[in-house]
Image 1 (cartoon, rainbow, N blue to C red):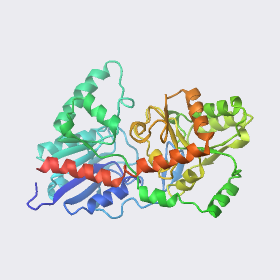
Image 2 (image 1 turned 90 degrees about the horizontal axis):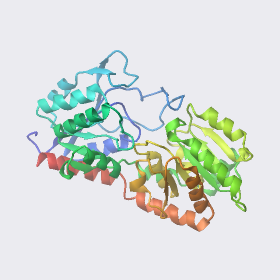
Image 3 (image 1 turned 90 degrees about the vertical axis):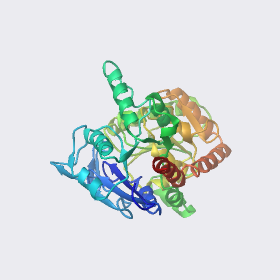
Image 4 (image 1 turned 180 degrees about the vertical axis):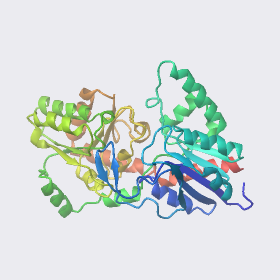
Length: 401
């Protein structure tokens, strides 16, 4: 602990992340915290190629403004991440030079992260870890399972605290022997004020957006916005949509909008184009962070059918536009942010029949859309940066008292 009341906190993370930048700025502005963010790579700064989106892109929000940060040097390329790469160096020097009291490490899936955790403990620096894992996403079968359990139990005993992003993540820590006294809720959040402001569309904006994408304003809109990769299960939404349009008579065909890109897009387009409702299914491609909120505002229900989804911050974003949410039971945020029948529904992953039923329930009633949307906004207003900073402060106080 430093001689003053200020806690010298270092945050080790792979690269600048668009969702984390505002939170880091707020933490840095805390009077009791002197934050240094240590990045292993600058891959997300400027133009870069996203392998899962399959496009070159540049985030349209600032990633490194408003907080002290440094990029570690590396041997060779620091573009790709794996268990062994990038090979960074200089961390010990930084921790000692800055006289760090607590090291906060994001994740434990690489050799360098594991090294950082144990090296800090040897230096007498306390360690907090924050990961995304839950028991859906981290299942290991066969001979690796007992080895993983032994390693994680040892790792979690080594650190001083675990920062849970939500209920399923907390259950994960419990599963590996972490007691409640070492777990602190630092929820996965987005900039609620930013998304609520960006989601406010004037009637003129709505008309312009509908005209641009050839949308009939009298029809309901179902929205999917994510990477088009197998794990996101956009195909399940497409199947559910076919059920909705094929079997429910007297129901005006809604639009199904797909935002995003990736290796599954071509197949999804081919399947959609072979269906009678093809004119109501639109693929709008990748949209940057400042562009997404207007689509949340335009839709009537947002659907995330993923499997093995650690959290799903896109759900936080959609809720800030006061929209009903449907997500699978393997979406990490579902347990915390979706209340069945209140602001949406949770369906069994892969069950497109149940998904179709839930979409019909919501879309068949304008009042239900409005009531559920208002409930989403009320829930997300209590799941933001204020709660994340409170959890971080509780963790730091516990480690320094």
